[in-house]
Length: 213
Image (cartoon, rainbow, N blue to C red; front, side, top):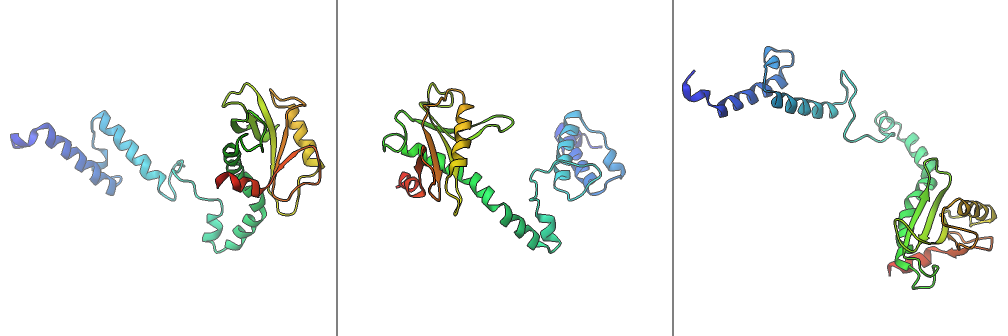
């Protein structure tokens, strides 16, 4: 070999070429070329990255982006099944999706407008590992660790079901399970279809819309 071709830079380029060749010829002698430990580590990470983008493989790999559960049905020409699933779970999903928007609107309203109890400067939620209780709205004097709970609320975002006595009873139970809240803590319901019960302060979509204007 020419002395000028035995420099460290040339050896690095040569090893890189060998690795690239091995990628296109798996099982060949070139794929068993020995390289430095750091080069092997980098090659393994590159191989793992390629495996995650393959549709199938010898060993299961965790993909970087998980396809939606309805993709296989769509690929088999049964998009109608996916549509039925979406329609069946749409109401539940929409209720979950709207909760962060409602909390943001309530924070914007604050207590200055008189629609929330005085001293409400933070809006969040509360839940445990078992989701019992799972409280949609919690108002406090500050966050994330509050000194005082100013309100406990629930979101009911349905077209034809107003906030009723059963929803109120559930909210009262959740209030009793919230640390820092007691029987005097105000209750709030954000509802799309009004209410059929008393004992709770109600906010409608029109009230929330005012938070953004």
